[in-house]
Length: 492
Ligand code: HEM
Image (tube, rainbow, N blue to C red):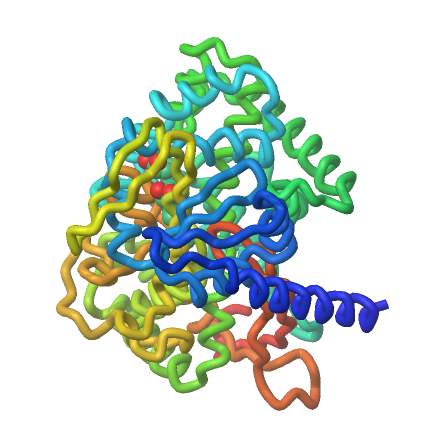
């Protein structure tokens, strides 16, 4: 069966290459941006894109350069894949380029919203975004995440009690993170038994976006169970009983806007996906990349061990908030997290033009965008530009550790790094995401040695990238590891 699939994939890839070669004869190199040729009114390109978006974009970028126009059936897209142009898209006014097209798609694909979208969207932008912005800003993040570190430690300890069996790296880097984050953001009434359903739904999202889901039922059933748990959670959590500031804000927004329980659950599910999907993927890849780079792993661990020593114990370090972790003594660890984000960032800046206009670029060139066209930032291609990032395909643990450390600034500031968006719509959860992944790595690297689960394995294989990944790279494979506690006295 698997050889049949592999042969099928090989034939499709070859067909795509042949098609691309034929099309290059029809290519008009004089227009700017150049247009990807099509023989079937864009539906041929649409099919190739649907089969493997990452490969399609990468082939087009190699053939047509950093900015090109492509029709995917009835959709016209301007794809931008140079760092400068992506920055121009991020800073374009929302009167010219609307950023809500992805919101509608996410409401539908993730939470199954089919009616009343406009009202839910308005509540999300008007009431929930400012709350997220306020609570997760560098200034108040410490308040919001006060118990996160100890809670994460306790969840990791629960999961790793039995060292005789191999453990999934995905589960190890994701489940405790999912649970601890939900408890700190949404309070102790949050249903903690929802991880498996969340992952089932999360894995189906790329297929749902492409409307090519073969195994529809498991993720549909997982979504229904999630919505049921979230409805119960919302019904229990009366506004006045809720002592947690962040979840109280949610409850109040729902009450003020007369949001009924199913719609409230859909809003929370949509929010959970925004919080977890990219963060969990980056948490998994951060550790995978480190395991594949023994020297980088040893250097990051040495940095963590020396910080633990400085704080007196791991527990004391975990009591410290994001502000204390935003410190030069975690320079290498932070760089490892940002480098993972550089390598896993795929797309951002997906917008739709509300009118005809010229997008001004830094070099004085203009891209004329027509009303209704989509603009699409190919962040991956920009991050693979060897003139900006040397040896761009390699995980370089200290790539971002070289520049002078500035508190309350991302270590990537000043470089053409786009994984967390930019301009007026920069990621509102970026400080939380960076802090959380750092804490996951602090705990795991300080407590455990990692060995491949396969007895005779020569080393660590990097997980394959899922070809339909969207937003950030998703993995096609899990990695299984055997953990051994570094010191028995750490109580594991
Ligand atoms: C590694 C983890 C994360 C990555 C890579 C990531 C990436 C991004 C990117 C690229 C954007 C900009 C999209 C665009 O302009 O097209 C964005 C926006 C956003 N992110 Fe994140 N994100 C992460 C974690 C989080 C978390 C933990 C939250 C928590 C609530 C969050 C909330 C948001 C929100 C609300 C926006 C929309 C901002 C706006 O439109 O004004 N993100 N994120």
